[in-house]
Length: 314
Image (tube, rainbow, N blue to C red; front, side, top):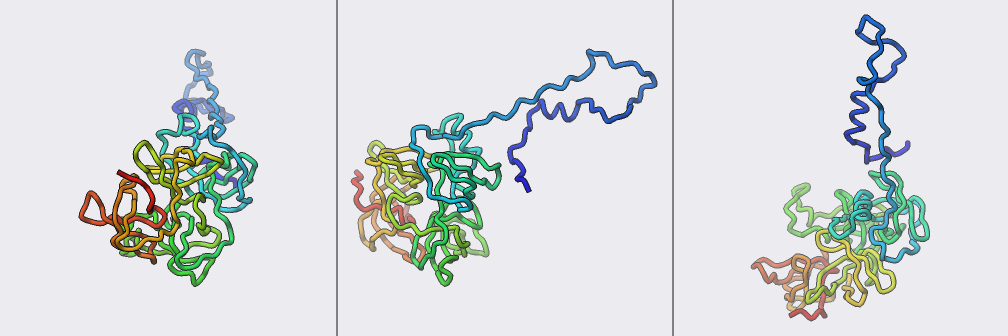
């Protein structure tokens, strides 16, 4: 069945046409007893409906376009098509992005056709696509890249049960540990769930898409997630879903699993900006580090992958 378009034409002119136009139904349904023709000046005139503007999606024109490893039918992560179109037309500076699951329909050298869940199959630049490597297995303690499968949006997760390595049970470390929302009377940040085969891959190396960097911005360091790396350019998504391009020299790639212990001096993000702090607890099962909060008596709870140890912060 052909996918129904999500974005329907709803202009005022189109509604007028549908509601008020004279339709020839093949008979005379007039209540008038005369055959007098309606005066020309009172006849409604159908006007052409402007076609929807076709936009070549390319929100970050300065970022290099290149090949992609995903094959037809593979899961990928990419923002909604509407947001990519808006960012192309208006600029990405104020556009909020969330990376959702989709499927690769037709891979290409610079652009690929994506089977969006809520939109028609559309060609977008490869730099806006994060492939999910298929047919991977995981073990307990691995950090995987996936999406929140009982919710939505790209997430890192830690494997808590690998009795089925191709469909492990995970905890989403990118959901705040103390998030007040609950399912089955368990906070969503503390809950585990089984994920489907071919919907994740294990994060193994720094600079991979889905891993974190600390980005030098003026005198501060800010946390960001890598979307794509090309040469000396790094495309990222950061605090509040804002995507930016940074020079690779301004980025410090962070360990996927930090080697820290209680009492260590570290740097961790507070509202997106790294601050100096100290480790008070490490939870290896749920992939988080408890550390002093400089603005509260309660500790910060930071996911694995967002901990730094070498940043010089004054």
